[in-house]
Length: 463
Image (tube, rainbow, N blue to C red; front, side, top):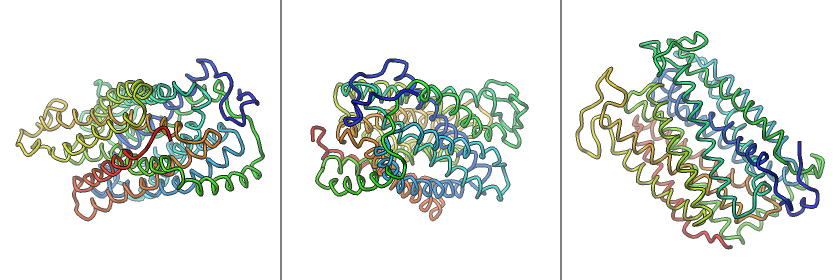
């Protein structure tokens, strides 16, 4: 594995940036990791769990929310500590490899989540939590490599291109699942009208469950170029020394944080709006399954359209990031998300914004109902805004954080992205459980976006 030149260790930025192969290999981390979010947490496995493993969609949404909250709490507590240790030890790739292994193991175990078997629910949620911890921690250390790859004026484009590439990977993985693996239990055929590959049984939802092992294999294949061609920081200290120095450095950073008002305010804003976005993506498919009765093919097709919108949104957002600055891109994305979420809460299977419409025809064409099509349009707005929001957020952190503690700050970044992410799904799960209404649970997300936007206004990029 290549490492950065030793004279750049202290500054954490190399004198010469690596070539195109190194940058493209780093970008493929997003491609490798995205199917976990696309297939598992959003469009296939989570709705399958709510609709066929859990007793009913509302309790399924609540259980999934509690598991997401548990994983988020662990990520929130450990991310800054691990980031600080990584800054002190130097290397990033060993951490990515270790946590990537957790992702692969947890995802593969999801194959055993058979429908209608209550005994599989606890181990299945545990596997989901393990995989979530793995992918999130691996992402922390992957993000920390960004300042070494391109000059500062190209960071926004790099971040946006990474997100766009990830969305394309998500699209292709969804097409693979819907077109060749997951079939309707009623017809036994996939979206392309084919019998599922490998003899996967539609009745026992093997096409939905195979998304777990597929995610693990996909990650192994496409993360490999990053390990082979992207430079890493050189090793500086042994793990025991790094542990002591990293924790001391983290304590010092936390003590200094109140004096760095823009950084602290941004991290607080990120804590709130990112948790709203993650919750929106995590429960969007489940919400559609409960509202319209969608199954894997409808939800997966919806996911493909969202991912296409997200690809263009992230690519355009990266260009606007370098031109207008990440703060403006984040603010614009939040306004779009607020509009789309508010409108979605006013869409039901037989009404749009309180106007009655014909409900979907049972057995009719895909998305035949007017309300379904409205949901598609609003979902695409969410997809188009979500990519730029996340890409510009990590760009803004790079502009604000000290360069010699970048992994540590990305650890804090992950902390702020998860500390209320544990609260967001918990609130959705609790409100849904108490009211037996998915709409009431989803309405909680409006508060997250409004509060995040209000805090973002106070951030100064040049501080």
